[in-house]
Image 1: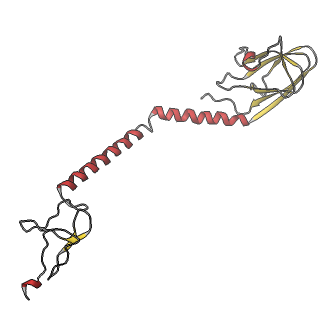
Image 2: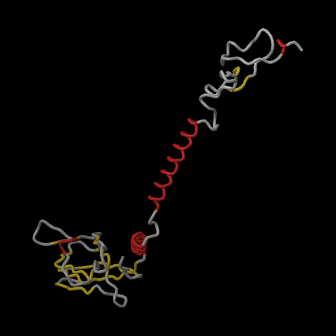
Image 3: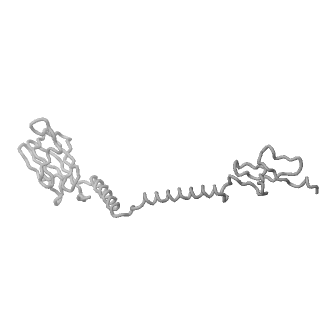
Length: 212
C-alpha cells in the first residue's frame, strides 16, 4: 500500500483541519473542550493530553481531586460536630423536661368539678376536694360576686395575680373564669373568700400535677 494511504497524525487539534488530502487522521477527545478532534502530537512523538480529561492522572486533576477530598472531609467533620452530643446527659435532660411539659399540658383536659353556692354574707371556701386535690380553674355562675381573697396551695394570697380592679372591691359576674398559670406544683387554688350571694364551680386535675 502506498505510504500516502497510511493514517497520518495531525500536529494541531482543530475542527477545521480534520480532512487530509489522503489518509485518515487519528481522532479523540481533545481533553480541553471535550470535542472529538484530530489528536495533537508532541515533538517527541507522544500524543498531547494537556489539560487532562475526566479523571485521568494529570497533575492538575490530582490537585482537583485532592481539593475535593479535603472539602468532603471538612463537610463530614462539620456534620460530626453538629451531631456530637445528641445522646449526652444534658440533652437527655432537656428532652425529658420537654416531654414532661407536654404531659403536664395534656392533663389540663382531664378535669373533675365541684359546685359551690351560698346566700348573702361572707364565706371562706376550702377548695380542696376528691381526697386532697386543689382547684386549677374557677368559673363563676352568678352576677355581682365580690372576691376578697384567693390563695394558692401554699396559703399565699394571689388575688392580685388573677383579679384586678380600679374600684374599691373586686366584682366578678356570671361566666368569669380564673385559670391557674400552672408554673409549678404550688400554682393551685386552695382557698377563696367571697362576700354576698355566691355560686361558682371549681375544676380539678384528675391526674395530679407532675413537677417538670
